Length: 555
Image 1 (cartoon, rainbow, N blue to C red):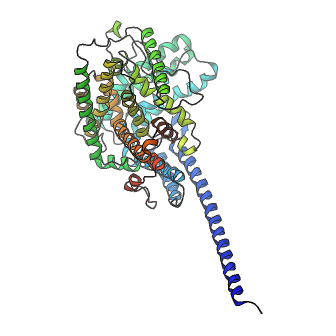
Image 2 (spheres, rainbow, N blue to C red):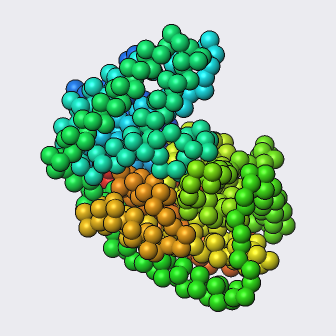
Image 3 (cartoon, rainbow, N blue to C red):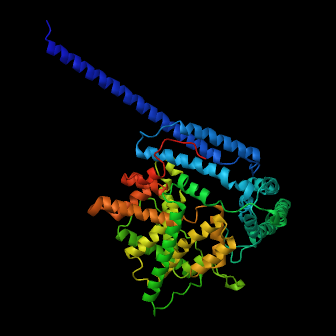
């Protein structure tokens, strides 16, 4: 006869074993389900990336009403599939990937619901045809057929533009006309010319002139494209007085974009306060630095390309040595021995041209721009980004994170001592700080209609030493057409400084600034609120943004 106690023990152990089997099976099922959801997420990301690109036929991108309706419907189908995924039990890194895909969908939804550039912005079509005449001639045989297709597409694109611009903005139309007729003398993205052609029309005339001597058989195509560009300008000039669409999106939509696309944990009013604070701080520091340096000789701008290149190389050598010696971050393998600069030298004096703002800064000392744009700024940052092992992050580019890092490192290097022996250069860093901070009130007032572009230009000139009309117009035009771009620098810097503070508080004496910078860069070019969550475990910002709530359909 069995021992009753032994029988109860066997029953107990059997129940435990059964429970373990059930739990194991449940965990296994959950793991399989999560892997399937992650696979679906990657598929959605790939489909969304393809959907965002317009269909191109014979060199012409299709922005017709029907094509955009198909894109919008495709987005709705992808969003439905995304909302069917529940990521709440996933590890933080995977949940971040989910939120990145959601933000990209929100971005495309915002483009369709608010920006609608194919219907509102005449400059959208200028952008499509702007760079073609930058093509070097003579053409290689392998490039010829593709170039001819693009050249023949220009009249088609601009003919369609007239039909598709159903609600154009007069402010955006005037900006497009300016780009067609005149050079802003900033030369970003253009071939380097001491005296650039007069706007996009001038570049097409320049192309026709070059084709005349190198490819005479292509001249008729070139002249047809030139005629189409000129006719588009004339059409805009004639119709601008009757246009009524506002250029700005208003603060409600601006705030929606901040939260749902950029994942910035601040309201519009908080962004405004951050800008005002940084503007006052920059002006105060600049005044103190000027007082401290009184009596010292002013920096003289370089006068030759050779001297500018010498100073740029000297500046990069100083940056690399300082960064390595002070252990501010790690230079991984495969980094170029030298980085190019986007602040190249042009002698404008023979034809009476004037230096723009960044000329005035970099010709005096290229350190600020080289830090921000090259190393360890955008060019260096981009190399790290392209090596990210996660495909969703590798293809992501958040402007607040990118420009926030570029702006942060300017003051970080200054405070770390890079400029201890360059007192007048410190003044240039504070001028750049003023410029970045002044963008916020200018951008917000343009988005509400309080400022026209002209008034915003005047405001920037009034607020920032060395500022002039050309660079002000170039920058502010971008911020009017791309809401929340102007705030990227100062707001991103503020977020990054908070993250430094949080991490230093968490780690105490174990905090290492260089290790922090490495970890930050290796997280990817994603919203800083998400990097903060991953690095610190603090989820207050993502909770405040509603990012941990159940999935919901975007507006």
